[in-house]
Amino acid sequence: MAFESLSDKFQNIFKNMRRKGKLTEDDVKAALKEVKMALLEADVSFKVVKTLMKSIQEKATGQDVLNGLNPGQMVIKIVNDEMTALMGSEAAELKLKGGSDVTVLMMMGLQGAGKTTTCAKLAAKLKSRGRRPLIAACDIYRPAAIKQLQVSAQKVNIPVFEMGTDVKPPQIAEEAVRYARENGYNVLLLDTAGRLQIDEEMMEELQEIRRKVEVDQTILVVDAMTGQEAVNVATAFEEKIGIDGVILTKLDGDTRGGAALSVRAVCGKPILFVGMGEKPEDLEQFYPDRMSSRILGMGDVLSLIEKAQESFDENRAKEMEKKLRKASFGFDDYLDSMSQMKKMGGMSSILKMLPGMGGSQMAQIEDQIDESQMARTEAIILSMTPKERSNPDLLNQSRKIRIAKGAGVDISEVNKLVKQFDQARKLMKQFGGGMPGKRKGGFKLPFGGGGLF
Image (cartoon, rainbow, N blue to C red):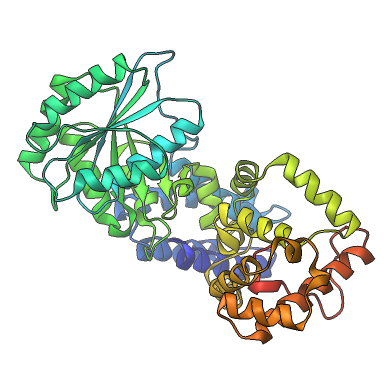
């Protein structure tokens, strides 16, 4: 995640603070100086850091804190509260019209920010909330831009309105609004053209679109990996066009995370969503309190619960529980659990939301989570016949040899998987279907972690 380095630094600062128990004003000032340096290194705007630190220092060096029962925890809470306030305090929602009225969202941004794929992801999210979205292809300049939009939209079953590259974008937008009204779509996303850098021609075209159609909200898509430059881009768009909200992309990449902490404070505009990966479900609503909690290494359990609720089928979960209690599960159930884990972003994605999982801890764990091993496990199971998957006791040596050849793996990998599977079934039987707690020697997760067991 973008904030791993920053999260690590904060955890070390606060760990040292907790160790001291009683704190003096000098202790707090020294810790806050480290917080300031960590924020600046994360590419947070200098003005933003200055304002933030002034506010934190005023509250953290008061006598109520220093004389409190747990001054270290109180300082951490103040830092958390002030960072949350900096990013907007509460989650901002898209303002959508009711009924059959068409809400027009104009998506803007520079080339390479991920605007086109974000259009498809946002449309998919709106569709899951009961809306009928349509995307209009208004980028007629970038080679294969329309094709890229069609491919991205097709993956999430969202229709695209396009008129080719001979019609000007303002006219495309105008026709798209008419088409949306006539065909029952109630959200229209305009995928406008970007440039490698801000120029007058691009701004004039966006202004012309606004003159032609009634745009309900202008949404700027910015690349979090560009750090402070993302804030400069947001400022320029706000001055020239006006923006109603921001979507930060590539927040899962190798970036220091300063954009998320600076955009709201500098531009006064809310961050609506953040892109945390390539998949459609990786566009997450932005919650300032949850983001602050992640940055400080306190986890994001609420988002984890929401992900689980979105990904897991309640009836299937009940069926699985029955099978676990009877220890009657087979390899199909094993595959199903892997699929559910993938929907939630994989084991690494889940672990990052747990408290205390900073960059260094995650690095150690990720070394043990072998994603390629998971793929090989899947190949082994899919090389079994339906009967073998439902009744693992059928797997004799000749069957295992055939399965290994089908999966393209060594026979030892098949034997290892079957052995681990048998161990899991025995454990389930022993514990009556309940998951065991910590036992001496532990129980290693099959396929490098990330499945049912």
